[in-house]
Length: 61
Image (tube, rainbow, N blue to C red):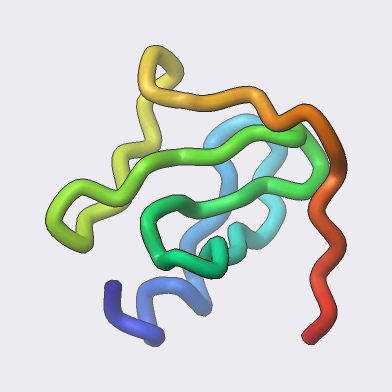
C-alpha cells in the first residue's frame, strides 16, 4: 500500500487515522479496535470485512 494513501485514509466509522499492522496485511483502528484487510495492497473498508481485535494496539510512532 502506498505510504501517501496511508497518511490520508481514515476509519469509515470514527474517522480516525488507520495504522498498518506489522505484517502489512491489515489496517488497524485503535479507537474502534477493529482491522480492515488489505487485498493485493488495496484496503477493504467494508463493514462485512472487519475483524474485531481482542486488545488495544498501541501506536509507538
